[in-house]
Length: 331
Image 1 (cartoon, rainbow, N blue to C red):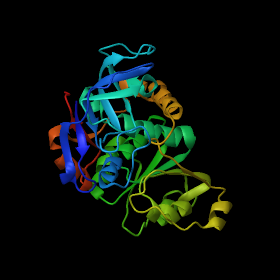
Image 2 (image 1 turned 120 degrees about the horizontal axis):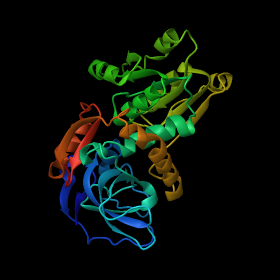
Image 3 (image 1 turned 45 degrees about the vertical axis):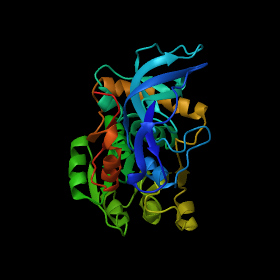
Image 4 (image 1 turned 60 degrees about the vertical axis):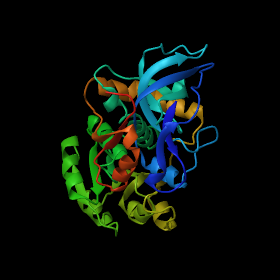
């Protein structure tokens, strides 16, 4: 089968769409998926550069964390899916290929009103957002949510999931145009930020000095101090991204005074059982919202898988608003 392959770790010029291995065969509760579409994530850029190694058991040089496609074959004990079912899901690697072998517990059925192109924009963003703000941070309807990089895939997913429950939202971006576009998704308070992370005072002003209950941080270390200042009493800070750095100084006094919870989270390195639980909640709580049209995937641009280098360069430009899709053999 063919897949996106990293010849050498480094720039996008090292990516190839090429034959890599024989077609895998499912056993037990495994499912072989004929991948129609996939999507790019920041993690793919890091892995390509050699900064984000794949977990044990997953390909080091074949990229891809999410996919949509059709069930091509099932293992002898798989019971939840049939050949021909339209499915989507997450994986720890190898999704940008013609076929993907995965556990059936990590799959969900694609709603009939969602195309393969749209479906590829959903799993990583919506599972990550739902797991972080609801399963882990326990965000409630009478609370407030601050989303950094609100115009990103995960940011837009979190925004929509929060607005379904009428939760007041605050969002930051370094681009005014992205903030303006987020208004259409229900963003209540838009905050334009600079490299100085100048949002803490604005949050205090907009909340009557109370602060926000939950922060979804997709940026990293540069925002940490201002995040802590922006938290309300008993606030929860969800740390996901490290784009602006991995190391920050902690004001213990402020954290103790606010009785703050600081939670780091990642999907990729979790056990199959943990990811299966996140996928189950996604199927039960998020997929019905997609079926009803209450939330929707947001696609910035779609690229042919053969144009994988251009797709990486585009995502690295930070111009995208929402997801960058890869057409493997899809709609």
